[in-house]
Image 1 (cartoon, one colour):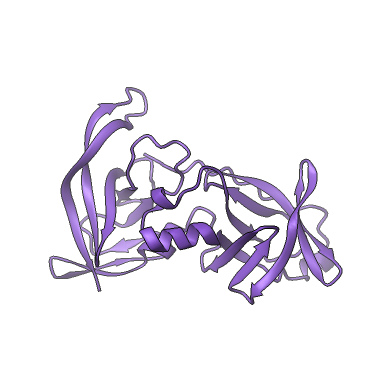
Image 2: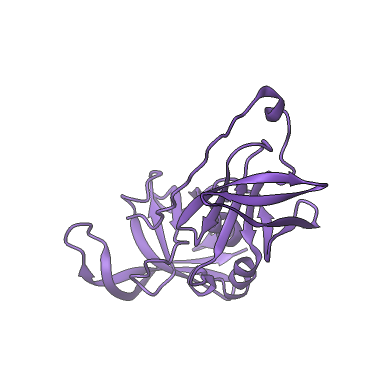
Length: 234
């Protein structure tokens, strides 16, 4: 089961060797600051999720080329950077219109694009955010070490190597924070669970499913089941 339907449009427009040499001062992934702050406060992506918002921006290493502006961690649109005087503006390509001027609030840490502020994270993959911001760290399961990594891998859980937390709540079928665990890098074939961060622990629950989609086999209606893992953060 997958929770990500992120439509990524990355394109290159009229690149030349000279333009390739021009590095992008904003290269990397930037997360909406309001979302980030709500996430840090609630530890719940579902609660932090807004109805419709600019979720993230992924700037390429080259100044000239396609820049991804994400909406709700659900889809993206193609944008371009335009040098204006001593600064830059972010523009849509279809229709051609300005999104906003870019202001550096804190070098390599925080920028403002138009009216929205964004903070930088380490991951440059638009599919990865919660893995780094919320989960990354060391835990203990029954006294044994468990490690969640920013790249979506996990060590220390029996027969589990990858985790996929849900960040897209456009289609909120189950009213819970959800995660898929799998031994292979494939969210489609993994097992879904409910999770919550409570005090100094990450608790992962089974889903007591009451209604299943006959085609996709997705759980359409369910509730929190028994605890699967209680992981104490260290």
